[in-house]
Image: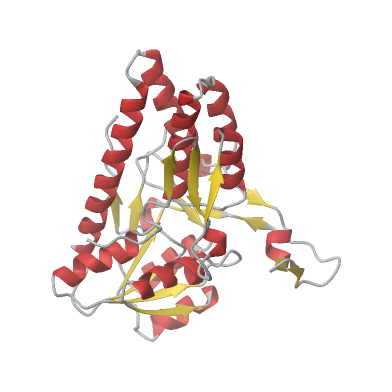
Length: 306
């Protein structure tokens, strides 16, 4: 089985964590180093890594800090504050609980990461089972290597599929990451602007929608990259199945309790370091929106046990 570099974009070698710099893609594959938990948190805040990469980076930062004998409670506080919408506290609390129980912490962390890898593969396999030969899949943002893996499972089942990918403004994760990894895996992929989804669905070009989720509440509401909610509404209007690759649920009861990260407006008003909006114009950039469970045809769960 071939995996996209985005499937497992973080590694720990010696005293450094190597992070696939997603902001450099697709022009080049470049890894940056984090030598401590502060640099790891900075990489998360700067969106050098996203989706599952952020989860991996939290665990590797805790593992590196453990080896350096840095108090893990202190590390956890910094990591938890890196991005508010993602429930890092669930992860760090789990590690702190292992420590409180006196369990072999390094073994527990590495074991959990190995389980995560296997469960992600299983998640892709479950998604592939929902796809028919000839289907065209619309996706939004990036799910860290799962989309080409889903495609690979379909390929092994002699199902020929293709993809439409939204550009995903303003960071262009769909165009820069998803389209890149699907194309290099040999799948037919078409990029569309975020505001073209209704027309493309009206033309009958989309058979299914598959997206990821950064946060899922107890009732099945999910938070994902901004723009996901409107796609879910359109999918329901056009009677197109809307599937979500979900993390385990957090402790929050419903989506209205999920804190939405609002990022600096310059990320919306600038591109490539140059301002593209008129001087004096303000920007507003909520990085996520919440899709209610009622719009979701099926949750494809990442089933992890503690």
